[in-house]
Length: 628
Image (cartoon, rainbow, N blue to C red):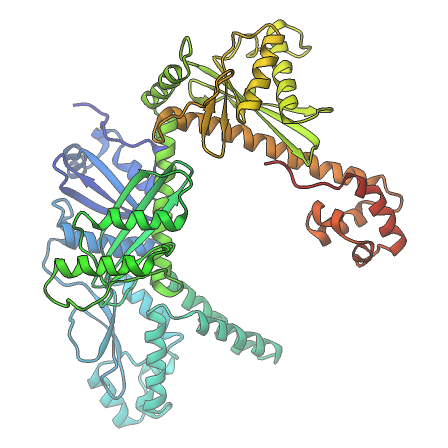
């Protein structure tokens, strides 16, 4: 038996977030659902040597052919989602849930004169509010213990309550502050009901205002030197925050919604959908798509919804999206018509398309978006690190650009400047489709006329190492690149090609990638090469170009920061303290250079005469922002 499982994901691909994971067999059936505080640590334990695993675990992982995971915000969200999917999929290896028991809820009996909070497995109590379900009884008991410290609602049975009311004395919970003791008349039934309503509002997620009010009360008690009361309020705040972090996915049973999350880059988008039915996450759908050029978030949302529902997917009454499309009203009409064709009942209900602004749905929408972000990062990592994908990208580049062989070494150049001054350049190197950061180089460009001249200088300085003209060790630079890329269009490409010819290295292939339309330019061509939007070759070119741009901008910003400090240090009367005060006050070099003498004089320690001197020193170098 092989000790390695073919579907095992790379450890670095598994997130360290809390989440829920599912093992699937070759027919797509869910074999096992589990939760984890740290997905990477938990899943790694399943892929230990097979002879070290428990017999049942070994049988499960060898029966499976795939594993997938869903990231959530907290461990408790993972617990809730695990419960939902175990009930939904009935996985054969989740034997601990194979009994037919119902699961516990936290209930508040608002239909009674004196409401009661308690743990129950029975639904259907008239006028009761339910929160849960919880897969572990200890989890709900911990929650109840915490909230009773802040909202002392009675939790005793009716018999105990009647006995205490007859005696006029509260039980132990009343004596230790876990109950407001309406039985003994310490609060009126009306006041006790208000406490129960506050507890219900808190468990439903409407807690920000209450916590803020408690913080104000704590500060007021502290200022009044009522330190014992302030300490009790502090403990109450901590208790509420602890419970709130565990209750973020408790939804109302009436909620039916699809919650969309999106993460995008220039070429690709990842979409995640949580399908909430009856207040529970009943399913997750995810896909990665190639995006259209220059499509706005609104346009993408429109296309996303049409793709999601035109194939007959069930449409709920509430659709939560990250951005409302421009034609939201018309799209809502379309969704409503499709929904009415799917069901006979409730035909008049209109589909509401909206962005979640606050509360529980906003928190859930953030969780869905986190999943989309992770999916996009994983997609990009797989495309850039997978050997077959990299090989395909290099081969496609060879064919598209007419290269004699696949460019195993790619070098890319970019230029950054501050309004035409303080020009710097960068060179990044990719070998076999992966960055080789030890070969990255930064360049100061003392004199230049424009970007094309700057590019030509960088190319000449690079190929000088091929001729052994450089003083420094040229290990790694003694052989020519298979492809030289410049960030820019036709003018920049022609400048680079001219520099190569003049240096006697015209045989080195060169191209440019224009950012606006992602066009690939070759020297001497009147029209660009247009690569398919979903091609691995374009993805590789884009990644190399973006890395060169990032490296150049980082160098430019570091140089900018050091230069302004050098300029200020040359001004008489401006030492390190005043220099820091100036930069902290204005927040940026641009703001300081554009300030008036009166504004500079507002900085403590800076007189009007000194402000004028500072302006004289820095104004001649005033310019725009860095070319990015």
